[in-house]
Picture 1 (tube, rainbow, N blue to C red):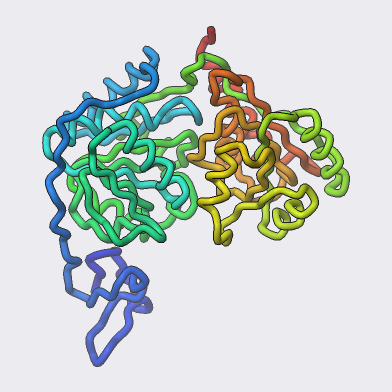
Picture 2 (cartoon, rainbow, N blue to C red):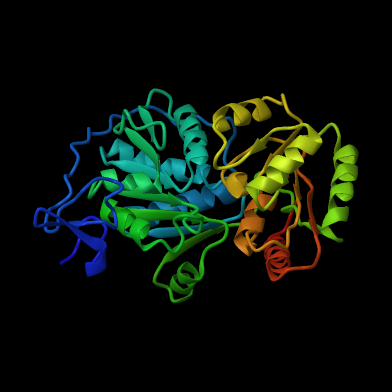
Length: 379
């Protein structure tokens, strides 16, 4: 017995209702009886004949990566784009999206986190004026079809066999990484080719790349041509880290600062101390907090790892408290540091870490960013 939606074959994860077995592994999405097939949605054919709108021209390095990716996708090859944070990996997908839409083929851009879905959706709408871009995530499920769908990876359960091009962004991120259920949903949703994007590929992806089984395009240079910000570490006891934070916030004024903490309760305490908002997975007003921070109504914002990926705020600086906490993995820290130095007006952003000791993740993240910088030359 197997579930045709999530691939479950574990008898312990099947229930029975009046003698009819059903899968309990994916019942949170909707009940699917054993042996039944998920309903294939009737999605509209994309209608796109416009022109991509960008506020800037792609750099030669971005254009090269974009052309290479599209060539491979046209040949029916799935592609991995290994690109540094802030290098413009979202923008280099536009040519591929444009080509598939013009050929009336269905495209989805999927990412793990709701907040990033909304930001990517807004960027897609701006880049493809007149296109019906639909975001599908928590709180946005009344409309589930459009010319271009941007959704969380959880929402892929709605689209079995639906997409000719499935773009998976940050596939190494929680909760997608190592989640067999979500990986299966993604595989089922794609009837064509995949374009996978990440600054921190996992061991499986790296092995596929090294073995030559997966095409890879690399982009470690940001559009402004400056090196990726590399972190500075300050080692001191936890109780002294707050004093260091206060001094750095004073020194960085008036620039905006994102302060990352490992746990929600740490964030709430620090928020009260600093008199600034804290955003985390349980915040009821996440959208409003981000809107006001992006609009510079707040200079300092405290966050858990919720904002480690996909969020772009120009000229923001980054400070991590208790950076040696296990929640801050190497991939997490690389993504956090990637929030800084994105702006052409402030390309040399700062990334500071306070920790009681130097963790393996801290050392590995610094080494990776240094290697990326060493692999390219800068203006």
